[in-house]
Image (cartoon, rainbow, N blue to C red; front, side, top):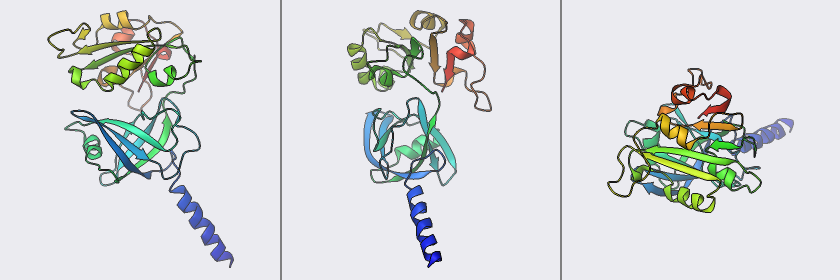
Length: 252
């Protein structure tokens, strides 16, 4: 009798653990929606087997895995801040990107191995007066008065992800959000913002100067990258030249 009870308890715990979203284990999430964004980017909605007890923290990521090759990648959810039933992942397809190609081949109803959340930057409202990024979270909190500055570099205008969302946010929060776009191949007519790679001049004109109330969040291949042990590493390049210190820069 005791053996049967023990097995029943173990099986129930084992079944529950397979449904609990945790940074310690991968669980299968179901693709419930796929929304095209542009020519090479889609939003994939992944549904949890059971609702979360609390929302995923802002500035955290989830890890996705391909069982066939044991390749793992990290993505930052763009779901609504208080969502408990699903996560949305914005995924750009790269020809040489194994994981992005795998995700883009998913269909509605397919399952995908995910774990998380992994908090990358513990954010609290008003921790800094000026921040580059964390746009949606800050602007949805009326008590958070942080001013946000974003330099967004792309190849063409069509490559600007969530452009209409950013446009709407800028319109609704003109005194709190400032976005500067720079393109390698700008439109021939009516383009008034940056051209080419992010430059020292662009940063000086569009990001507040270094001080204790400024935090610059950097994402992308030009960020200088994290150290080999995945720590933040040293501040490099333009930000170092302009005088930003390690406690004023965070690399995703």
